[in-house]
Image (tube, rainbow, N blue to C red; front, side, top):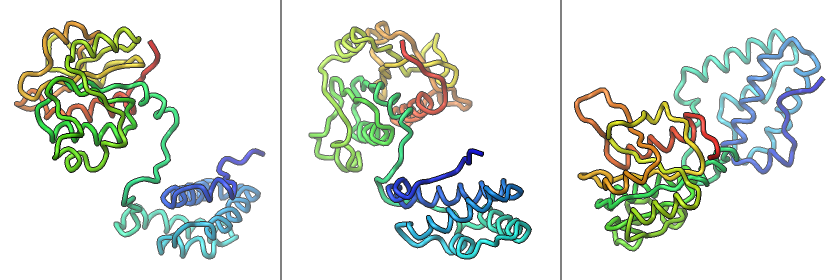
Length: 269
């Protein structure tokens, strides 16, 4: 029989502490779902008890109490696991919050997709909006951020503060002309999407995005230059239900990028 949840000693030791906790939690859930399989149950208990000693920090108290003495008897084990998972669902002190930056295990499929995305900022005026773009591009491992025209870049005295230290972690470039930048990306095989409140346009939640792609975002007051819009392959928008027809450019960009990477289907041109 092939067992599902297994972690080698070497693999587990290379995990971040957050990932170690998630691995043990996954094993505990697997154990609860396979109590009737005596062989698999025994293997899981042995693995959990061996891995706990390899954790980089002390386990949360509830988890520690459980894994310290996992009952071999399946009926006692059922009650212990049911109580643990019930408590974990309703008690705030059992929620494992990740604090601090770094030590993230990223899905290689999403990383590969993110590397094929370029964000093009068409004459953004606000250093705060550009700083927010740097932050979301870093969080999502976006391939490149192209700052066009008057868009401030990391040389601005306030950029490092507004970008929260992400400028050095994002590949960026400056282009005097957004139109030239978009034409160059198109010539290199990128499909160009404009994020704009225009008609006709498609909801970002309904579009099947083709990779590699460039997402063009526009000036806070004027939107994307009409000459640039004409060069775009497709216009997409964020649907709204209220009175205002659009969100702040950095907020809208973040939502669109998350949808592109995690919410929909995407493939190569």
